[in-house]
Image 1 (cartoon, helix red, strand yellow):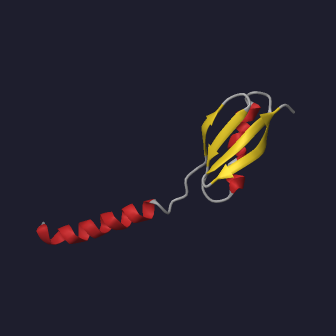
Image 2 (image 1 turned 30 degrees about the horizontal axis):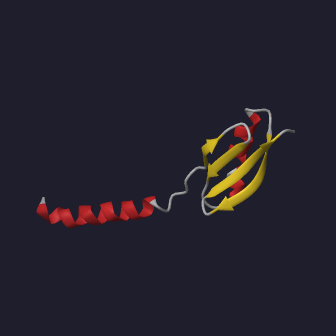
Amino acid sequence: MISQLPVLLCVCAALAGLSGCLSQRPFLQSGDITTAEVVYSGDIANAVPVAKQHCASHARVPRLVDTTPGIAYFACDPP
């Protein structure tokens, strides 16, 4: 059992390292009738469908206002 411990530790370390490489799905961090903050990774275009869905629930359309690394800020404007 003890001889297998280094192998197990290496496998666990490799899995932990790879978990950061997996892409995260964009999600709504916060929002109301006039705004939407979407957390995303990679291309900003990945954040747009989340903003569209949120703004549509208030009969509005999203407009990109600002970005910071990993967060897209949208205004929800009347159509």
